[in-house]
Amino acid sequence: MKITAARVIVTCPGRNFVTLKIETDQGVYGIGDATLNGRELSVVAYLEEHVIPVLIGKDPRRIEDIWLYLYRGAYWRRGPVTMRAIAAVDVALWDIKGKVAGMSITDLLGGASRDSVLVYGHANGADLESTVDAVGKYIDMGYTAIRAQSGVPGVNLAYGISRGTLHYEPADAALPTETVWNTSRYLDFCPKLFDALRGVYGFTHELLHDGHHRLTPNEAAQLGKNLEPYRLFWLEDITPAENQEAFRHIRQHTTTPLAVGEIFNTIWDAKDLIQNQLIDYIR
Ligand SMILES: [Mg+2]
Image (cartoon, rainbow, N blue to C red; front, side):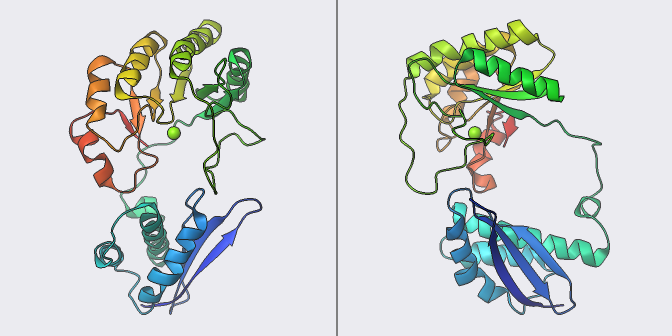
């Protein structure tokens, strides 16, 4: 079995959703997602210039070998663009393997172990009252877990407050959006938000919050401690994660569960966090 062609498909109005399609000499093809939020066309170039030319002629069944070839073979390893491109190849090859085997990837990897998974919705509000209302709307829709992000009094354009009709904030495609920030107001306001949410809705639902990498480790420790009475499901991205060791300080001061990882590129970015049990959830 050989890879005969591969092409990159860019689609979706208003955004660049990137799909890699790998074709074989036996008519079976696989697809993998190559979308890197805000930097989509960088991955397109990486795939077209550096990956697709070396895929042609390879045996698509050798998934691990091809992954190592692309990861170790390039002088420059890691980084979001490279890893997004390699991941798209990996998923497309698993898609081919599953189709050839006549099995879902879940079955190939051992079969399902859960009948359902917990998901959460993004509730955003310009102020405390509208955020409380937004959480209520998700509860009415049947969500059992909700992430709550609110505008902070005196802080314009705080992270997580939707500026359009989307329920998430796409990463900036050009230069970063400039916002005003005030840590002390945020630290003061955030526990009040969750106090109000628990006061209105009780403790039946899981509540989550994203700090978007804004706090120092010590400020994050303070916030985690002050949020403990409201039993968050997790506190996400509360400090920049480049320095994994920084999470030790937060961990030593709060029992609020910690989540991080959406900007990590490889398992190595989380090695110390996992090995030392410094977080509760890898995203
Ligand atoms: Mg986040």
